[in-house]
Length: 252
Image (cartoon, rainbow, N blue to C red):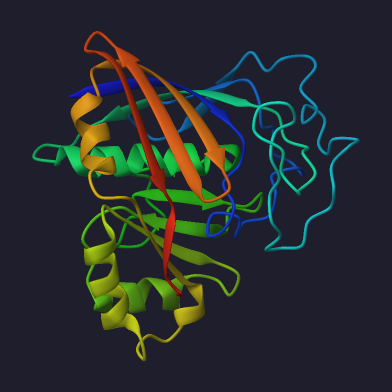
């Protein structure tokens, strides 16, 4: 089954999703982007007034390699952080693999939404026998983020974290806090590079609710307010609104 999603996102999530540098150098953060079955991105029609069209915005604040991203002006409740990033809109095509569970599709969609300013690629190989669910590369092609949205063994976590470059991040998304906490307990005191590992969980029912609401064609409005995410999904099933806190489970 194919899922076509037109996503509009207001704001930028805070920790733990602000672990990547702000996409102000070499990455444009507005316009439309399509992910085909090959996982390759294709951009169409970036607006002429896009402040990222020619690199850094004149109003952009330089970020440290792991700086905190900021919220879009005029779209959310006031934040103590200065707002520099406009709303984003992307068109995302995702094809479910044979036998792939609906909640896994939903988690990959959530990952795309939360990292969309970094132009994430879904189900794209990285030249290794393991393949991430979501990957973000820098301008030189180096993997900056490896996103995993399924059930993952501690041994695989150790191997992926060891394979990543020193500034790489392995970010694992789990449906709920209980199974995320169990995985975190298994990781503590283990792993060659625990500082590279992040585990985030969502409120109970949020991921499954999103999975149940999806249809072949969807329009999704997302609002990020630091560690909270609200999604409004519109399709022929109707309109479904879901909200969750982003629970940073590991490191606690």
